[in-house]
Length: 68
Picture 1 (cartoon, one colour):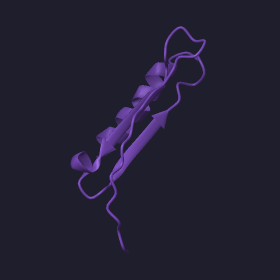
Picture 2: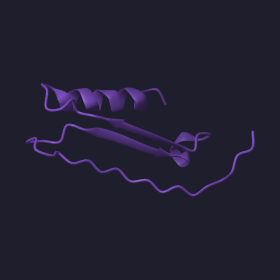
Picture 3: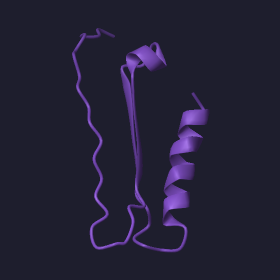
Picture 4: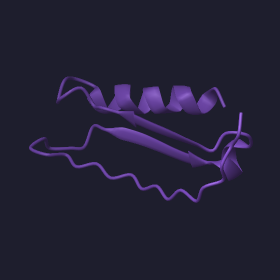
């Protein structure tokens, strides 16, 4: 497999919308943090204002991070 080196810029932005707090979580990691992998992008939606949505989205991001 041929790999082409690319410069990739990434940003993460989330808005709470009409909710009182932002329940979303995200993770952006680059090749310096991951080694052989070019990048990892995780977005976890906070479940639309349901109970513990912020906890659930943070747990999802933490679970991915702990596997690395």
